[in-house]
Length: 388
Image (cartoon, rainbow, N blue to C red; front, side):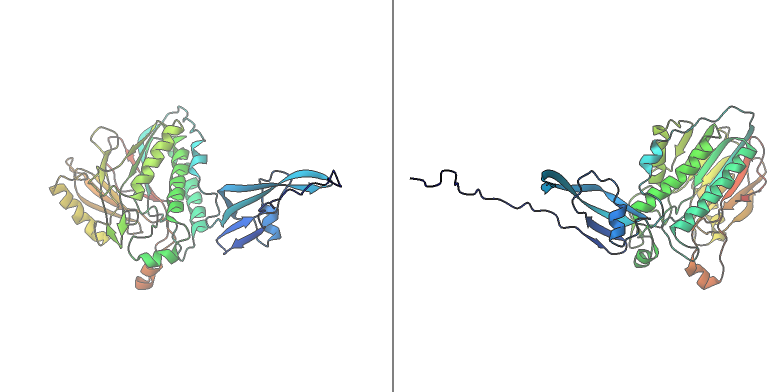
């Protein structure tokens, strides 16, 4: 006989494993777990501020994980959600990655205007994205590139050429295995993924601006020592196993995605380090492009070029050879074309943050800049170069 009919054994209960709010941050990267929120959260600035972290310059790295549970509040059961996410400090001052955003922006077609039969050649050289030196780090590089791009676009508008050759001469990223690998681990402010992403975006930003002004654009990329696939300073694979060449391929995809089919992309043959471009497709101006690390000193590049001619290599027939690597502007008149006119060597200045080791040894330091020059259809080049 049961004395109390309404007395029943209590059911066993399991306490929900609720996440414990907290935050860990080493000054660069961190992990955060928020308290439970009754409403959906997409902005964690207030939570970071309460933890003593300035949200300015902080980016959340997807995915954001959630935990949910029910809790009594004012006599009612409500659902609470806690968020767990990783975050990092933006060393570059910009939101990486950028390429997905850039691909959403269609390239505007240039308007039809009277144009000169000329080609503006742009020598995009030695940015070494990610490198920190005596001229600063990524923020300083970004400002330098932005200022230079504005000067470049003004020149394009002023000259109104029929085409532009955008020559990426290499060393676009600093990399980590170029030579003294341990040093690069402490003198870079971007990972290799960030370096490639940012270098691609900077090139695309300039290239897109040009493509909205000029009906024919050619982008050329060549291998280089900083971009080359290396381990312990030694090259691996083919000459085109190179971050600079890879960046050119990503830009080609972006151009296709944004409808910019008036941009042509070229790179060396798989086993070559140089290439040649017939600028007007008439055999008159043959532009040779190489990085320049094939020679140990600037005054040896001419010898290298002569030897290429003997071996019928890609730049053998060039009447103008452009290269970077040596970080300062130099124009050399040399040799003869089949028309009896001069050939020219043009060494591009650097866009990077400086080379303190070279300055320490020699006392010299070149001023960064972007070299550009004009080739006119059917008219021999005379050696004029502008440094922006």
